[in-house]
Length: 417
Image 1 (cartoon, rainbow, N blue to C red):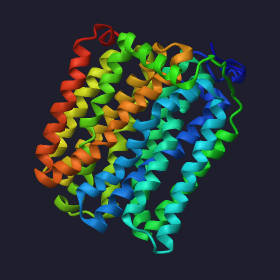
Image 2 (image 1 turned 30 degrees about the vertical axis):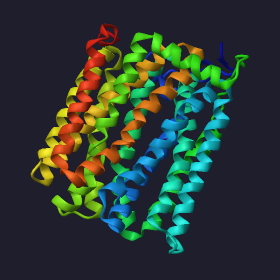
Image 3 (image 1 turned 135 degrees about the vertical axis):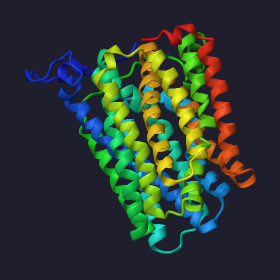
């Protein structure tokens, strides 16, 4: 059994203005506020990196396939070593692992900026840089999710997750728009700002005081990994959620369609691309804030079903959208659905998993859900061979088949609160 040497309750202020049972009570935890700021910067950086890499490769190669390959690299790295990240999250001091991985991610963004400034950059340079970045996120992501529970406790995880998602979604609005402006100023400028954001994220984590005191299991890491896989398979709700996470492989096919549609069908430039992506964040922010306020009254199983249906319907609308207005509406709707996914799936996983399995369960989640970045490759191939609409239709069908099967076969998930 693992424990935190400093419990979340010990960190709460005694100010009467904060109701310990209210939805805003998590804001009274100093370490949670630092975590939110760190996540805000990281998520803004994620948006800028994805859009900047996609636009740079598409502009230099005019190939949706090469664009897809480059943006799939972080996902490939995460899928490859995510299980190791989960085992480390359960075996090591989470705080140290978080800020160290953030510093390496920062250095990769800075290296890209320097290559662009010195005019020695080639599009393929992004492949090894993205692989290193993805490897660090493979260690970072399950650790960050598990560390959040160390800070706020299980009883306030839903409120914390909803608020954190809502605040992070502001980065989904500002990040792409900022990225579009930065690309107009200079491609290297986008990566200098990206490095600054990641660096700020690392500094915020360094100020966090919560520590996770791990207890060695007495086994080697690979035995711990096997135990985590077996535990996840034996637990029906966790097994079903991981299967649903794998549907992201098909859901991700819409990602390369966005810059191609913006550039080739709508005739917009870098700034327009950023605005279209920002509308996705508008929807996600609205959904996250609403769910934050009603989190205790929402049945998470029903929320997940609604989010899956809404997301696929929104992708269908995006596929047939004839103009920028309908495209924008589809992006807002996708954001609303995304907020439901991000609040229901990770929260259900963390509240279902036992304390000593949480890191390994979340590593499995990130391993399957990050297949959505492989969707960049599938989507890129499909767009170049059969076009945007047929590619997205195939993605919708594949995603619904996988997620629908898991939901139908797991009554406990549908009833989950």
